[in-house]
Length: 266
Image 1 (tube, rainbow, N blue to C red):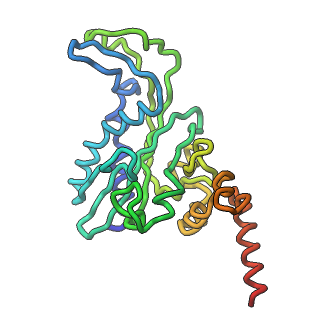
Image 2: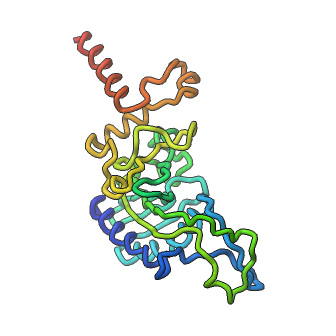
Image 3: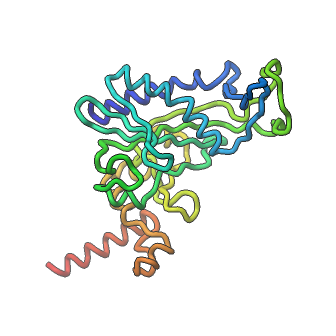
């Protein structure tokens, strides 16, 4: 199966999940956790908790999607391994898929982190926190799940009975979904402060359509940019001094300087 066909099929599947995750009033179907005494404990809008629950809800549906399309699906063998899901076709192609979720306000999201630009991303022929080497995959895609947060639900201190289920306000609502190759929605800045993660673009329309700054430059430029990217601390440890570049403009200037040096050597 070609990458384009896989992404097309996965996109058609994922956008249908809105009706699965939402009530008729556009609220999230999850209200909280229930114990053996049928008491319901509500949840907060903590992004890590929400993303994990969404992932658990979608994995069985994605496994059915794989079977319907002659694919096999496997989850990562360890919690911190890349990717979240691996799809295999009958021809031996592997497709990496990561779940990424964030809340949005207006036309913009809070931001996504698209995985490390260190480790497995640079040492692509090795298994480094991965079940398969990075370069074994035909594509590296993101299932994006975006949602609105509901303000001031004030329910966290209340324990509900099962007969009160309909009175519980969901903490998130109005889902949006997209599927895109990681490189098409990447920004030229890291995500999550000082961590070694690739940041995403934040405009919702651009995310859905895969219109990040590398989308016209190509995946090879994305790979070269991020495999050579250093933050200040890593540049000092590597003996570089200051990073060679910090955004696409300084990256272009760096490449021009290298080209000028090569020209002098001719």
